Image (cartoon, rainbow, N blue to C red; front, side, top):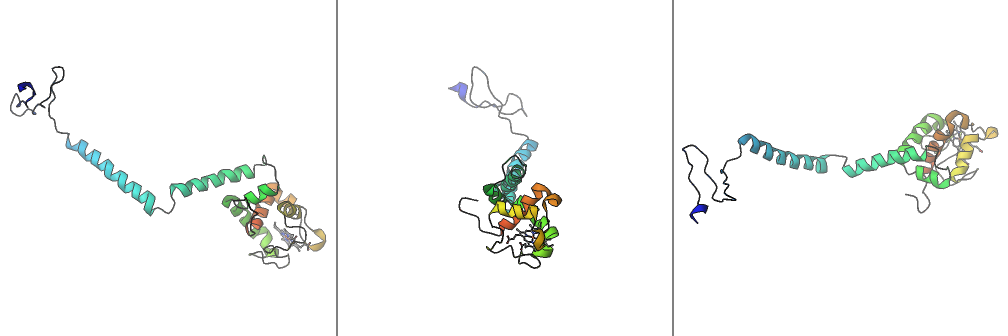
Length: 184
Ligand code: HEC
């Protein structure tokens, strides 16, 4: 038992020795140095403050940043041309914020002069209602925008915009319309 009792320092000024003995080895009861403790507690405080600022005070959470990144990836996939352009793909594009923003920019510079900034119509027809002269399904819209309606004053946009921008601007028009069930 006397082996396990705390041993006083052998020399004055030396650290005390811990009471336990393992295989004849004893430990000094050394205090951690202050620089180490400051770094350690500092790291804990930093982690808490950083976490709070990231979770509670930042406008973009990790989830919303992930959503933004996924939208960019989806947009690239949808307009890469590798996916087949059909009604479903166009409806999907119309719910993708990146594609819709591209389409909006094109609409404002290329289409708004005739169809109105809010698609309310003007020289061109209203595009925000559900009445369509040439059919309202997505591929029909791509067809009209690509080929135009020469006799009625709707220009031929296919050669000007190309396929990607044409589908983006159609996606923007569709974004103002309720999507069919199953499209997110
Ligand atoms: C110079 C004026 C003008 C511009 C610019 C213009 N349009 Fe048109 N657009 C028209 C007119 C006029 C019509 C009506 C055609 C008709 O009566 O058949 C029309 C028809 C349409 C239709 C068919 C509407 C329906 O009811 O079927 C769509 C879709 C359309 N435009 C989209 C666009 C898009 C997208 C752009 C931009 C890329 C654009 N237009 C630019 C004049 C324009």
